[in-house]
Image 1 (cartoon, rainbow, N blue to C red):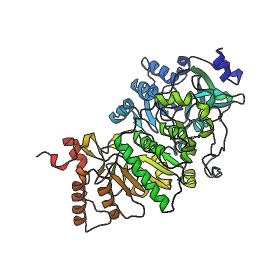
Image 2: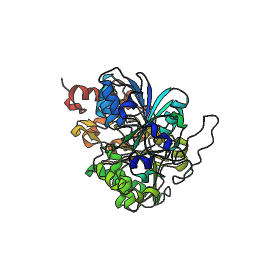
Image 3: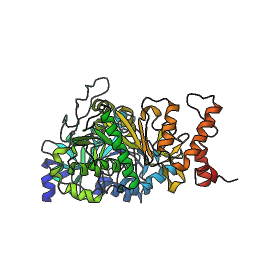
Length: 506
């Protein structure tokens, strides 16, 4: 046995479970429900799904795939392209599977990420025939140590009939000890989650399963696909500075201190760039309690700004992967990875008083946010954890650039084409144009703040024209709308590739 494998395999009696990826893939039957580890391209199963994709080229294999969140290209690209995915949930982020979903070739179940564990407990998702779980080690006590994400793996392991472990020896052993695996009991017979600050440890360092469930072990050395976030640009830096000024005003008002409250930042370039803005600020002794730790978090740890960061996944660009995983001992006592039903749990979010920063695709003049659908019909990635955090956070903040497609699209519209976050869950909106603090405001009070502070100048007059005519037509109703025009901006975009009214064709 490879000494590297022997070192990671604490239970030597499991050595006879080691098989090839092809042998493990052959165990998965057509029509099965399969759970897979992984959350935002981190800690995901890799070699067995690729072997399954090869198998699907020669025989009928279609499975339902449930994960923590998005995976790397092995599943959401190659396995999907091979026609091997029937249903996917609860989140995805690859262009290939997105295209198949929007063509109707793959059924997609979008869901709040904190809800998935309950769907498994209730049997809505399942029965789970197999879990394919990437691990860095199996301890002498029989604990499966995940790699750099936890996601839904603990609940999948509890309910799956069989477990296939991808023992990935390319991940550093120093990952052992950073996980905190706590699984709540059944609803109706459950204690409060005993987490009163993000730095506590309330569970075990690995996932405990009956050893007879382990059907196969496959050795892997495949690295995680790097994060696709792009560096901050001038506009995202402007948004960061606007948000920092907002926090300064909150401190002056006595609502926050210089260490703020625990921060959550959603997946993606804009939210990461906004968080990066803290590096050169006066804020310090910060705590991050999020679902994903992106580049910005480790930059802030290096800058001495963040003292502790907890999440369910670590998702990094290639440069940061080398830096962090090449020296993980430096960060090990400052980070913690938990199951997503804990990191995203409403009980925990509300108790800790999180400040939540997530990205919007579009928003309307009353503060409703669409974070998933392009023009109401085409899925992007999914709602992810943004709903978990926005509804339950102390401050639910949404950030977006005020325009898209070179100025043809306004991110602020009369009515969103799809609602993910209602006006009741949106406290603050930030664009590169400015900020709208919507707390305590009625719908008509929000309109001038959103249009004047956040909309792109090219669309302000058009937005005011809609609102004023809606007010006249409805007798100044509580939430004025012209129903026959509310989505006309999206219709104009579909017909003329722009939302600008003057560009409509005769």
